[in-house]
Image (tube, rainbow, N blue to C red):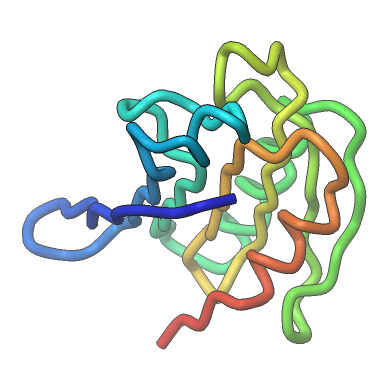
Length: 129
C-alpha cells in the first residue's frame, strides 16, 4: 500500500497515537483502489490505564468486540489480532491488533482485509519507551 502522510494524535500535549493515510490523486491510488483521503489506512492508539491488569483486561474486551480472534506475539508480549470495522466500505473485515505494554493498551487498526499477518507484522514494528 502506498503511504503519503501521517498525523499525530495528542491529548494534553502527550502523543496518544497516529494516523497514516494512503497517497491520493495518482494512477497508483486509483489502480490499487486505496481508501479516500479522509480514511486512515493505519491508526495507532495508546490508551493508559491505572495498572497493567486493567490494560490487559482492556485488550481482552477489545478483542471480544471483533471477530476471528488470533493470538499473536509482539516482542515477548502476547496480544490478539481480530477483524473489525475500521473502514466502513470493508464491512467489518479489517484487521486490528491489540496488546498491553505495562499499563498502556496499544491498538493498531488497519484497512488490511487479508491476511492478518500484515497487521501482525506492522504491530511488531512498533517500539514504545
